[in-house]
Image (cartoon, rainbow, N blue to C red; front, side, top):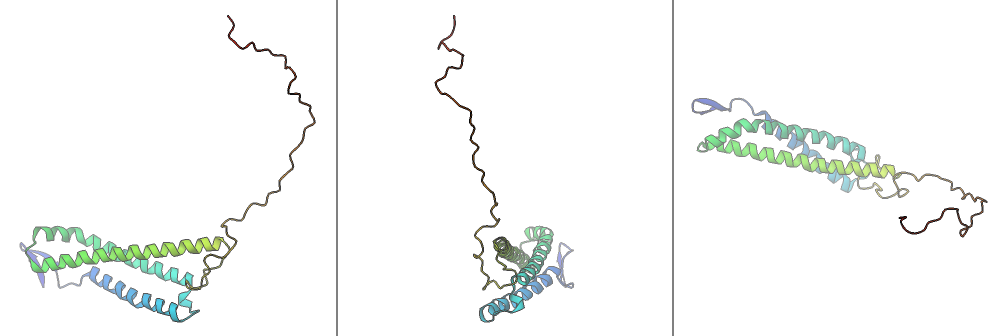
Length: 186
């Protein structure tokens, strides 16, 4: 089935929509894996899937997938958006435009949320590692984010030298040989 607008094939329904298939696949992967990770973190300790390094790797992979979904859906929108604007009376086209807009919005929102969490987790890991706490092999739940020496860079070990005392006498009231009259000479 092909949607014809002014005798031009506008929406080829005989072919699968690549953006829909990709968005659906990534959403299913995220819906299956993220809650499982959260449940494992609540009820099970020490699972390798909960290690911070593994979590960062998996979330980075999901982040790239959501970025690909959002970019693909956004690349479809310019041609479809103009088609939707010029033909608002076609019901199937209106529904398709709404689906694409919704898919695009939620794709970008998922990508932004996941990127924010991923960057926050990376920053906490790097700061904690700088303080001497090894959080990379622990879980998010059991990681000791605040332990360590209390500073990210070790302080400099510097020996203070005593001030050198000079034995040159200085008389504060001794005239220097220069006289100042206190005014301008005429």
